[in-house]
Length: 167
Ligand code: SF4
Image (cartoon, rainbow, N blue to C red; front, side, top):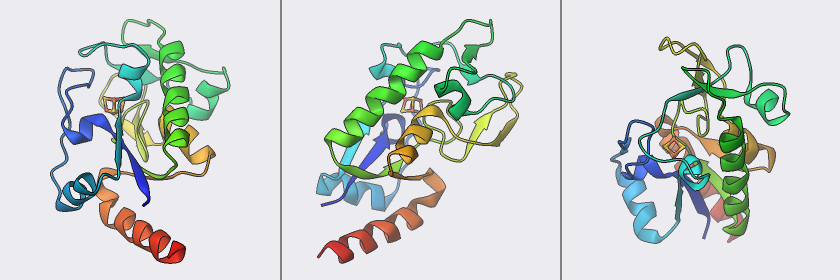
């Protein structure tokens, strides 16, 4: 059975920077959970951060790839550097996905860790742009197919195709 790595906040865990969750209510997700396919994980909590915690963003103009290569960082609005924690979180996420043989992931969008299709500007001004968080980037780099919450149907199709191919 194909497993899916899922951002814990989508499953209702109160692990976000603001102390809340980002619960995604959906029948597909409920079915996958009942089937035992979901590997639910919060990279930032796994790296030792608490909830709530300061909001952090990838530095303006930088990419996840640049952060992971040591050419940029992740900061909160006071300029404190959280790069080490976010990089560790991405590493632990990759290790878990590999241990669990996850070939698919469903990640919360906009997060500097999980974000699969967009991230915030780095200026804490509410602006966002196309891009990915550190976890999304690292998972894609090892061949995991990463989806955003508004791509659940695409994920379901890809999962079905993978399982039909395997059977
Ligand atoms: S790191 Fe990912 S799982 Fe954890 S709160 Fe942020 S978006 Fe959710």
